[in-house]
Length: 221
Image: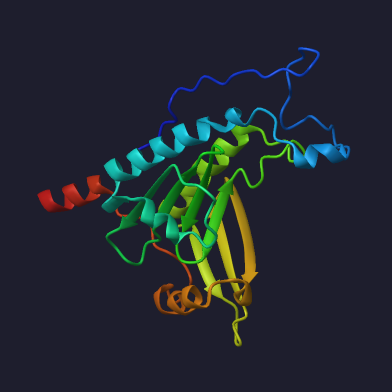
């Protein structure tokens, strides 16, 4: 696939009350954060680069793969749980139904919700409070990696064996990283679960997205 390139970003340095730069991601040095950190979000604007990168990823997917792109607030309904407000919502659907669609939902926080395939939402950040101490560069890398794993065919969703009370997912990029998890079907909307049983690949593995360059090369031959 053509290479995705992260846009140039200007990452601001934020300082505490003593004017010392805040080392997000390492603030608590392995210790428990203070109680008030769980209810406070300092400098939420530091997450703005997530919107920039999400927009760049959408453009890359549209230019690189054989997809249909829908920009409409209504597609935010792809999410299992809707945010309170939506800034932008874009669904990118491969023309091959055996490849997993992606829906990007940008929120005013600012954050990004990513819906992948049938029954999985990924949040960047998950919370954003001071206790979570998210490093925005790590979040950018995680968002890019998640999208890359899906489009390269490293994404799967499957129900466990009968009585299929769990739906499991796996993101895998050999040599780079792997993540997996599962949710109880009773925690998910019943209609979505029923639909997923009809559309998920038989073995659970979504196919790689078709590259436009390969389509053009095949057409020339």
